[in-house]
Image (cartoon, helix red, strand yellow):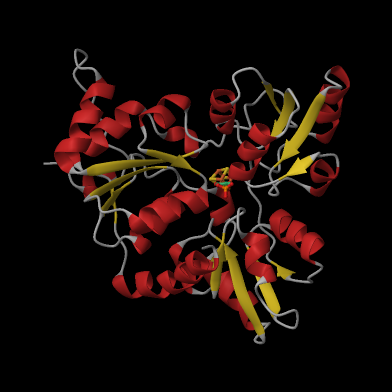
Length: 327
Ligand code: 13P
Ligand code: SF4
């Protein structure tokens, strides 16, 4: 029998499925048999996005997790997202096909250091980006995502002092848009910090008709040359409503799949990273999931995300506040 202990070493079920079965059809059958739903983030590989019941950004996925009636949620995203789904949907069994799917941004905010940091600002409330562990969510007053961050900060009175964690680029961007002076934790995402301004500008010279669009997790110099800044969802919507035909896209490359599907006649160019030898605009954590791992995960109902109930309840409060403020 396979259990979470067997998986601990590798982080996923390492069993080769029978070569003669069609994994995509089997996944569809298992989903119906087991009353399961597959939620996938926009940064997943295209074939995973295409078998998902729901594809979205962090906000839409947490809203979907909160309202699902399914017995099983297979989360094709990273650990903090699956954890968020478990916090909001405790009765569902939440599965993450590969437990190694972590997040460099969530890792950049260890709980003990954050508690010390927070204690220096006793009159501040904590607004944390959803890209955090359940422990950090439990230490926060409100959660936000890149889609609703400005709205949530603007809902607080101007006198309210705020700590923002963990993404310094998103925090600085929110400060610049809202005129606030939030105290910002010094964390960052390895994907969004890797874009090269120099190479983006070279690309723009070769494609003068292209617009540059960027996620606010990117560094300030990239945001300064961008024609549009927005969350993954906002970037996708912009490419649909805008009349331009070509875009240089400074965010994780997985979103290009939905952009291309929604705009078959437009051209999307992934923004290049500083290190031209690596595919750094691919999130190495997001891209760990495969169709094979999703099949095994549904079949054996493992690896499962579990949470201590006290921690879950403490983390839930800040997430519920976000969902209420995002209505
Ligand atoms: P959004 O899904 O809110 O755009 O966040 C981007 C991200 O980095 C998710 O890991
Ligand atoms: Fe984390 Fe960045 Fe990957 Fe998103 S893209 S999961 S923030 S490492």
